[in-house]
Image (tube, rainbow, N blue to C red; front, side):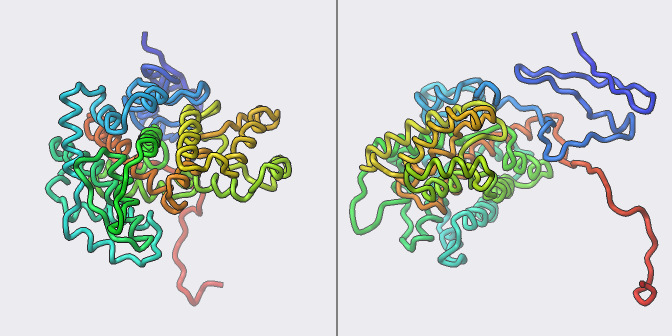
Length: 427
């Protein structure tokens, strides 16, 4: 039975339909409210507003649940691969063996960049931040692959999605190589997605590069954990840019620019810097007291959405241990600080009452450092992984018959109409 909510305003009542999703909170449909009543809703940050209908990712922050197309993130991280998750996010179902073989081949054979594209990197200063390079380079893809930028053509949308997923590791690896002054390494079709990325990032012409299955699996799992996260700031940016009909490469570049913000994609770098600043376990009590006294910020704990344990954090913790043990940093002092800080925060009433649980950023920074990446690359790796989520959300938006250009409204509090006065008459 259909439900309505009733809003009474200035003595007049307005019936607002209540829409139910497959799970999660009900939604009050206010689309006709302005037309009927000349009144807007006010929601800074859109934290209480559903901006779209989606079938891709579901988060229950109170229960600590993250589902991709209905599959728990823990199961996907444990049993799946990043490319299989890419197929799932794009198409709605896990692939059959033949479907996955075709998809894997398509992505593998799209990893090369146009030969002229490499010259684009030399336009940046040698000390450019990898995220600055990523933002510019991804936006420039539309100048090289203009045969797949017609957003009204489903086949071109599919091709551009595949190209973005395939070429992002190549671009990210080149951004890294350029920042450290090493020659670019071309992708290899014989390697898996994560293995290929590590090869392009760390191999050098002077010696043979040997793949490490533990590190490759860790990299793949990190990609899975960051693949999509519902309507966050960067995803909403991609959708808003896409709502104007902008080409997919421009939309993903917009998402990368948004992700660069320290309150979004830069959080794992901030968490690692905090752990390194603490330095040793014996300094933790002083730091904890400083957090309580509001002298220090506790990075890597709590989440805008999760009011319980971030389900990605447990997987990331396990991955962190595996990587540190493999590369010989099992006694890493930063990990010791992390483990002790986590233990205290999970038991101290101050943090428990405020539900400041560790999130995925708490462990991912340590793991990425152990893999060999500098902190400047952390957000670039996040962008690499999140590209599939962005392009899946973008694709879904174009398949939605209710799609329209985004146009948020405002609560105006500026001056009322006033007449212009000539300069010489102003007091």
